[in-house]
Image 1 (cartoon, one colour):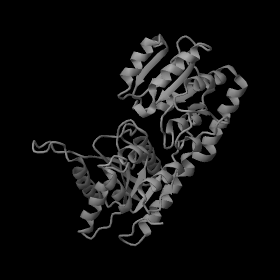
Image 2 (image 1 turned 180 degrees about the vertical axis):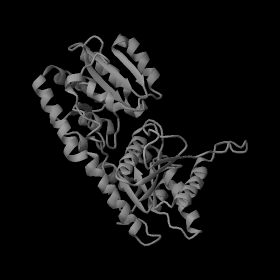
Image 3 (image 1 turned 90 degrees about the vertical axis):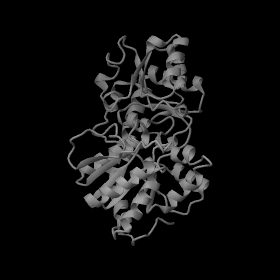
Length: 383
Protein backbone atom coordinates (compact mmCIF):
# COMPACT_ATOMS: atom_id res chain seq x y z
CA UNK A 1 0.00 0.00 0.00
CA UNK A 2 1.14 3.56 -0.72
CA UNK A 3 0.48 5.82 2.25
CA UNK A 4 0.98 9.55 2.72
CA UNK A 5 1.64 10.67 6.30
CA UNK A 6 1.46 14.25 7.54
CA UNK A 7 2.40 15.31 11.05
CA UNK A 8 4.06 18.11 12.95
CA UNK A 9 7.74 17.25 12.59
CA UNK A 10 8.79 18.82 15.87
CA UNK A 11 9.51 17.21 19.22
CA UNK A 12 6.08 16.08 20.39
CA UNK A 13 4.05 12.93 20.84
CA UNK A 14 1.97 13.17 17.68
CA UNK A 15 5.00 13.64 15.44
CA UNK A 16 6.92 10.87 17.15
CA UNK A 17 4.05 8.40 16.83
CA UNK A 18 3.49 9.32 13.18
CA UNK A 19 7.17 8.91 12.38
CA UNK A 20 7.48 5.59 14.18
CA UNK A 21 4.32 4.40 12.44
CA UNK A 22 5.77 5.28 9.05
CA UNK A 23 9.00 3.45 9.84
CA UNK A 24 7.14 0.35 10.99
CA UNK A 25 4.92 0.38 7.91
CA UNK A 26 7.95 0.68 5.65
CA UNK A 27 9.56 -2.28 7.42
CA UNK A 28 6.41 -4.26 6.62
CA UNK A 29 6.70 -3.52 2.90
CA UNK A 30 4.50 -0.44 2.49
CA UNK A 31 5.64 2.66 0.61
CA UNK A 32 5.43 5.67 2.92
CA UNK A 33 5.53 9.33 1.89
CA UNK A 34 5.96 11.95 4.62
CA UNK A 35 4.54 15.35 3.66
CA UNK A 36 5.42 18.22 5.99
CA UNK A 37 7.31 21.52 6.26
CA UNK A 38 10.38 19.82 7.77
CA UNK A 39 11.84 16.37 8.10
CA UNK A 40 10.32 14.69 11.19
CA UNK A 41 12.76 14.69 14.09
CA UNK A 42 13.02 10.89 14.39
CA UNK A 43 13.07 10.17 10.66
CA UNK A 44 16.54 9.07 9.59
CA UNK A 45 17.27 9.56 5.89
CA UNK A 46 18.04 6.72 3.52
CA UNK A 47 15.54 4.19 4.90
CA UNK A 48 14.08 1.92 2.18
CA UNK A 49 10.49 2.73 1.12
CA UNK A 50 10.50 6.01 3.07
CA UNK A 51 10.15 9.27 1.14
CA UNK A 52 10.01 12.86 2.35
CA UNK A 53 8.29 15.71 0.50
CA UNK A 54 8.82 19.22 1.85
CA UNK A 55 5.99 21.74 1.85
CA UNK A 56 7.21 25.13 0.72
CA UNK A 57 5.18 28.11 1.89
CA UNK A 58 5.20 31.42 0.05
CA UNK A 59 6.23 34.54 1.97
CA UNK A 60 4.46 37.01 -0.32
CA UNK A 61 4.18 40.33 1.61
CA UNK A 62 0.42 40.45 1.11
CA UNK A 63 0.05 37.51 3.50
CA UNK A 64 0.35 38.49 7.14
CA UNK A 65 0.44 34.77 7.98
CA UNK A 66 1.93 32.17 5.60
CA UNK A 67 -0.89 30.02 4.13
CA UNK A 68 0.57 26.68 5.27
CA UNK A 69 -2.72 24.76 5.20
CA UNK A 70 -3.24 25.65 1.52
CA UNK A 71 0.35 24.90 0.56
CA UNK A 72 0.07 21.58 2.38
CA UNK A 73 -3.15 20.68 0.56
CA UNK A 74 -1.55 21.45 -2.78
CA UNK A 75 1.52 19.37 -1.93
CA UNK A 76 -0.62 16.48 -0.72
CA UNK A 77 -2.55 16.42 -3.98
CA UNK A 78 0.65 16.64 -6.01
CA UNK A 79 2.37 13.79 -4.16
CA UNK A 80 -0.77 11.64 -4.18
CA UNK A 81 -1.16 12.05 -7.93
CA UNK A 82 2.50 11.56 -8.79
CA UNK A 83 3.02 8.52 -6.55
CA UNK A 84 -0.48 6.98 -6.78
CA UNK A 85 -1.13 7.10 -3.04
CA UNK A 86 -3.89 4.87 -1.73
CA UNK A 87 -4.71 7.13 1.21
CA UNK A 88 -3.50 9.94 3.45
CA UNK A 89 -3.03 9.48 7.18
CA UNK A 90 -2.86 12.80 9.00
CA UNK A 91 -1.89 13.22 12.63
CA UNK A 92 -3.31 16.10 14.67
CA UNK A 93 -6.59 17.46 13.39
CA UNK A 94 -5.84 21.13 12.63
CA UNK A 95 -4.86 22.03 9.98
CA UNK A 96 -3.88 18.64 8.60
CA UNK A 97 -7.39 17.21 8.24
CA UNK A 98 -8.66 20.28 6.41
CA UNK A 99 -5.66 20.17 4.08
CA UNK A 100 -6.30 16.48 3.41
CA UNK A 101 -9.96 17.21 2.69
CA UNK A 102 -8.97 19.85 0.13
CA UNK A 103 -6.48 17.47 -1.48
CA UNK A 104 -9.20 14.83 -1.66
CA UNK A 105 -11.49 17.29 -3.44
CA UNK A 106 -8.73 18.37 -5.84
CA UNK A 107 -8.11 14.79 -6.91
CA UNK A 108 -11.82 14.01 -7.14
CA UNK A 109 -12.06 16.65 -9.88
CA UNK A 110 -9.57 14.52 -11.81
CA UNK A 111 -11.45 11.31 -11.20
CA UNK A 112 -9.01 10.06 -8.55
CA UNK A 113 -10.02 8.78 -5.12
CA UNK A 114 -7.97 9.81 -2.08
CA UNK A 115 -9.51 8.87 1.30
CA UNK A 116 -7.90 10.19 4.45
CA UNK A 117 -7.71 9.08 8.05
CA UNK A 118 -7.31 11.50 10.95
CA UNK A 119 -5.58 10.39 14.14
CA UNK A 120 -6.41 12.50 17.18
CA UNK A 121 -3.59 12.85 19.69
CA UNK A 122 -4.99 14.97 22.50
CA UNK A 123 -4.14 18.65 22.50
CA UNK A 124 -5.64 18.98 19.03
CA UNK A 125 -8.91 18.28 20.85
CA UNK A 126 -8.42 19.54 24.41
CA UNK A 127 -6.48 22.74 23.63
CA UNK A 128 -6.63 23.71 19.95
CA UNK A 129 -10.09 22.33 19.28
CA UNK A 130 -11.41 23.84 22.50
CA UNK A 131 -10.60 27.34 21.25
CA UNK A 132 -13.90 28.98 20.29
CA UNK A 133 -12.50 30.22 16.99
CA UNK A 134 -11.37 26.70 15.99
CA UNK A 135 -14.14 24.57 17.48
CA UNK A 136 -16.37 24.55 14.34
CA UNK A 137 -13.53 23.76 11.93
CA UNK A 138 -12.14 21.04 14.20
CA UNK A 139 -15.55 19.38 14.44
CA UNK A 140 -15.97 19.68 10.68
CA UNK A 141 -12.55 18.15 10.02
CA UNK A 142 -13.40 15.12 12.14
CA UNK A 143 -16.78 14.65 10.51
CA UNK A 144 -15.30 14.93 7.01
CA UNK A 145 -12.61 12.32 7.62
CA UNK A 146 -13.02 8.95 5.92
CA UNK A 147 -11.71 7.36 9.11
CA UNK A 148 -10.86 8.62 12.59
CA UNK A 149 -8.66 7.05 15.25
CA UNK A 150 -7.82 8.09 18.80
CA UNK A 151 -4.82 7.01 20.84
CA UNK A 152 -6.78 6.16 23.99
CA UNK A 153 -10.26 5.34 25.20
CA UNK A 154 -10.15 8.52 27.26
CA UNK A 155 -9.51 10.66 24.17
CA UNK A 156 -12.29 8.95 22.21
CA UNK A 157 -14.82 9.62 24.97
CA UNK A 158 -13.58 13.21 25.38
CA UNK A 159 -13.90 13.88 21.66
CA UNK A 160 -17.42 12.46 21.40
CA UNK A 161 -18.60 14.32 24.51
CA UNK A 162 -17.00 17.63 23.61
CA UNK A 163 -17.76 17.81 19.89
CA UNK A 164 -20.84 15.65 19.69
CA UNK A 165 -19.53 13.98 16.55
CA UNK A 166 -21.33 10.92 15.21
CA UNK A 167 -18.31 9.42 13.50
CA UNK A 168 -17.01 6.07 14.59
CA UNK A 169 -13.72 6.78 16.34
CA UNK A 170 -11.51 3.70 16.35
CA UNK A 171 -9.17 3.43 19.32
CA UNK A 172 -5.72 2.34 18.21
CA UNK A 173 -3.33 2.94 21.04
CA UNK A 174 0.23 4.14 20.83
CA UNK A 175 3.00 1.60 20.52
CA UNK A 176 6.68 1.03 21.04
CA UNK A 177 9.25 -1.03 19.17
CA UNK A 178 10.15 -3.57 21.84
CA UNK A 179 13.32 -4.58 20.01
CA UNK A 180 14.70 -1.04 20.08
CA UNK A 181 13.31 0.02 23.46
CA UNK A 182 14.53 -2.61 25.89
CA UNK A 183 16.09 -2.82 29.37
CA UNK A 184 19.83 -2.73 29.93
CA UNK A 185 20.26 -3.37 33.67
CA UNK A 186 24.04 -3.51 33.47
CA UNK A 187 24.25 0.07 32.20
CA UNK A 188 21.48 1.51 34.38
CA UNK A 189 22.85 4.44 36.35
CA UNK A 190 25.72 4.79 33.88
CA UNK A 191 28.30 7.42 34.68
CA UNK A 192 27.42 9.00 31.35
CA UNK A 193 24.29 10.39 33.04
CA UNK A 194 25.29 10.37 36.70
CA UNK A 195 29.01 11.13 37.07
CA UNK A 196 28.86 10.84 40.87
CA UNK A 197 27.09 7.49 40.83
CA UNK A 198 23.69 8.87 41.85
CA UNK A 199 20.37 7.31 40.96
CA UNK A 200 19.09 8.70 37.66
CA UNK A 201 15.69 10.30 37.15
CA UNK A 202 14.67 11.20 33.60
CA UNK A 203 12.00 13.41 32.08
CA UNK A 204 11.22 13.61 28.35
CA UNK A 205 8.85 16.16 26.84
CA UNK A 206 8.44 19.29 24.74
CA UNK A 207 8.64 21.46 27.88
CA UNK A 208 5.23 23.05 27.41
CA UNK A 209 3.35 24.23 30.52
CA UNK A 210 1.00 21.23 30.40
CA UNK A 211 4.03 18.99 31.07
CA UNK A 212 4.76 20.76 34.41
CA UNK A 213 8.51 20.41 33.99
CA UNK A 214 9.13 22.66 37.00
CA UNK A 215 7.54 19.95 39.14
CA UNK A 216 10.40 17.67 38.09
CA UNK A 217 12.89 20.08 39.65
CA UNK A 218 10.85 20.25 42.86
CA UNK A 219 10.56 16.46 42.98
CA UNK A 220 14.32 16.16 42.61
CA UNK A 221 14.93 18.44 45.58
CA UNK A 222 12.63 16.35 47.76
CA UNK A 223 14.16 13.07 46.58
CA UNK A 224 17.71 14.25 47.29
CA UNK A 225 16.82 14.71 50.94
CA UNK A 226 16.69 10.90 51.11
CA UNK A 227 18.65 9.51 48.13
CA UNK A 228 21.54 10.85 46.03
CA UNK A 229 19.88 11.46 42.67
CA UNK A 230 20.55 13.21 39.39
CA UNK A 231 17.81 14.47 37.03
CA UNK A 232 18.19 14.29 33.24
CA UNK A 233 15.84 16.60 31.33
CA UNK A 234 15.44 15.61 27.67
CA UNK A 235 13.71 18.00 25.27
CA UNK A 236 13.21 21.71 24.88
CA UNK A 237 10.47 24.28 24.87
CA UNK A 238 9.09 27.38 26.58
CA UNK A 239 9.53 26.11 30.15
CA UNK A 240 13.19 25.17 29.85
CA UNK A 241 14.39 28.61 30.93
CA UNK A 242 12.10 28.73 33.98
CA UNK A 243 13.16 25.19 34.91
CA UNK A 244 16.84 26.14 34.75
CA UNK A 245 16.19 29.18 36.95
CA UNK A 246 14.24 27.12 39.47
CA UNK A 247 17.09 24.60 39.67
CA UNK A 248 19.44 27.44 40.59
CA UNK A 249 17.01 28.87 43.14
CA UNK A 250 16.49 25.49 44.82
CA UNK A 251 20.22 24.75 44.92
CA UNK A 252 20.07 21.65 42.68
CA UNK A 253 21.57 23.16 39.54
CA UNK A 254 24.56 20.79 39.64
CA UNK A 255 22.21 17.83 39.99
CA UNK A 256 20.25 18.51 36.79
CA UNK A 257 21.40 17.99 33.21
CA UNK A 258 19.41 19.68 30.44
CA UNK A 259 20.20 17.65 27.34
CA UNK A 260 17.98 19.44 24.81
CA UNK A 261 16.29 17.59 21.98
CA UNK A 262 17.48 14.05 21.33
CA UNK A 263 16.45 11.88 18.41
CA UNK A 264 17.35 8.56 20.03
CA UNK A 265 15.84 8.51 23.50
CA UNK A 266 15.98 4.72 23.40
CA UNK A 267 19.70 5.11 24.09
CA UNK A 268 19.08 7.20 27.20
CA UNK A 269 16.06 5.56 28.83
CA UNK A 270 17.74 2.24 29.74
CA UNK A 271 20.36 4.22 31.70
CA UNK A 272 17.75 5.73 34.04
CA UNK A 273 16.09 4.33 37.15
CA UNK A 274 12.78 6.24 37.22
CA UNK A 275 10.86 8.29 34.66
CA UNK A 276 9.05 11.42 35.84
CA UNK A 277 5.84 12.43 34.08
CA UNK A 278 4.06 15.00 36.30
CA UNK A 279 1.83 16.29 33.47
CA UNK A 280 -1.36 18.23 33.93
CA UNK A 281 -2.87 16.22 31.06
CA UNK A 282 -1.77 13.28 28.93
CA UNK A 283 -4.13 11.70 26.43
CA UNK A 284 -1.88 8.64 26.41
CA UNK A 285 1.60 9.19 27.85
CA UNK A 286 4.02 7.93 25.21
CA UNK A 287 7.08 8.74 27.33
CA UNK A 288 5.72 6.51 30.08
CA UNK A 289 5.33 3.62 27.64
CA UNK A 290 8.82 4.09 26.21
CA UNK A 291 10.23 4.07 29.73
CA UNK A 292 8.25 0.97 30.66
CA UNK A 293 9.55 -0.88 27.59
CA UNK A 294 13.04 -0.15 28.92
CA UNK A 295 12.13 -1.44 32.38
CA UNK A 296 12.03 2.08 33.83
CA UNK A 297 8.98 2.49 36.09
CA UNK A 298 7.17 5.81 35.65
CA UNK A 299 6.01 8.06 38.46
CA UNK A 300 3.22 9.95 36.73
CA UNK A 301 -0.09 11.67 37.35
CA UNK A 302 -3.58 10.22 37.47
CA UNK A 303 -4.91 12.10 34.45
CA UNK A 304 -6.30 11.46 30.97
CA UNK A 305 -5.20 8.21 29.36
CA UNK A 306 -2.30 7.51 31.72
CA UNK A 307 -4.31 5.04 33.85
CA UNK A 308 -4.80 3.00 30.66
CA UNK A 309 -1.03 2.69 30.33
CA UNK A 310 0.24 2.64 33.92
CA UNK A 311 -1.33 0.30 36.47
CA UNK A 312 -0.81 2.13 39.75
CA UNK A 313 1.30 0.13 42.16
CA UNK A 314 2.02 -2.62 39.63
CA UNK A 315 4.23 -1.22 36.85
CA UNK A 316 4.48 2.40 37.99
CA UNK A 317 2.87 4.94 40.26
CA UNK A 318 0.14 7.53 39.66
CA UNK A 319 -0.38 10.51 41.96
CA UNK A 320 -2.39 13.73 41.84
CA UNK A 321 -1.25 16.62 39.68
CA UNK A 322 0.96 19.03 41.62
CA UNK A 323 1.39 16.73 44.64
CA UNK A 324 5.16 17.03 44.79
CA UNK A 325 5.40 15.34 48.19
CA UNK A 326 3.53 12.23 47.07
CA UNK A 327 5.37 11.93 43.77
CA UNK A 328 8.76 12.36 45.45
CA UNK A 329 7.82 9.75 48.06
CA UNK A 330 7.06 7.25 45.30
CA UNK A 331 10.42 7.92 43.68
CA UNK A 332 12.20 7.42 47.00
CA UNK A 333 10.25 4.21 47.54
CA UNK A 334 11.44 2.85 44.21
CA UNK A 335 15.04 3.91 44.75
CA UNK A 336 15.37 2.48 48.25
CA UNK A 337 13.45 -0.81 47.94
CA UNK A 338 15.30 -3.05 45.50
CA UNK A 339 12.68 -5.82 45.68
CA UNK A 340 9.89 -3.41 44.83
CA UNK A 341 11.97 -1.85 42.08
CA UNK A 342 12.81 -5.12 40.35
CA UNK A 343 9.19 -6.28 40.53
CA UNK A 344 7.90 -3.05 38.99
CA UNK A 345 10.65 -2.92 36.40
CA UNK A 346 9.81 -6.42 35.19
CA UNK A 347 6.08 -5.68 35.23
CA UNK A 348 6.61 -2.49 33.22
CA UNK A 349 8.55 -4.34 30.54
CA UNK A 350 5.98 -7.13 30.49
CA UNK A 351 3.12 -4.64 30.02
CA UNK A 352 4.89 -3.09 27.03
CA UNK A 353 5.68 -6.47 25.49
CA UNK A 354 2.22 -7.98 25.87
CA UNK A 355 0.02 -4.97 25.09
CA UNK A 356 1.88 -2.21 23.27
CA UNK A 357 4.59 -3.68 21.04
CA UNK A 358 4.56 -2.41 17.47
CA UNK A 359 4.01 -5.97 16.25
CA UNK A 360 0.63 -5.91 18.01
CA UNK A 361 -0.50 -2.40 17.09
CA UNK A 362 0.69 -1.84 13.50
CA UNK A 363 -1.54 -4.63 12.10
CA UNK A 364 -4.52 -2.74 13.58
CA UNK A 365 -3.60 0.26 11.44
CA UNK A 366 -3.12 -1.95 8.38
CA UNK A 367 -6.57 -3.49 8.80
CA UNK A 368 -8.11 -0.05 9.28
CA UNK A 369 -6.40 1.24 6.11
CA UNK A 370 -7.83 -1.67 4.14
CA UNK A 371 -11.27 -1.12 5.65
CA UNK A 372 -11.31 2.59 4.78
CA UNK A 373 -10.00 2.01 1.26
CA UNK A 374 -12.61 -0.66 0.60
CA UNK A 375 -15.55 1.59 1.45
CA UNK A 376 -17.57 3.12 -1.39
CA UNK A 377 -16.17 6.35 -2.82
CA UNK A 378 -17.22 9.33 -0.71
CA UNK A 379 -18.09 7.24 2.33
CA UNK A 380 -17.14 8.82 5.64
CA UNK A 381 -16.63 7.16 8.98
CA UNK A 382 -19.90 6.69 10.81
CA UNK A 383 -21.17 4.83 13.81
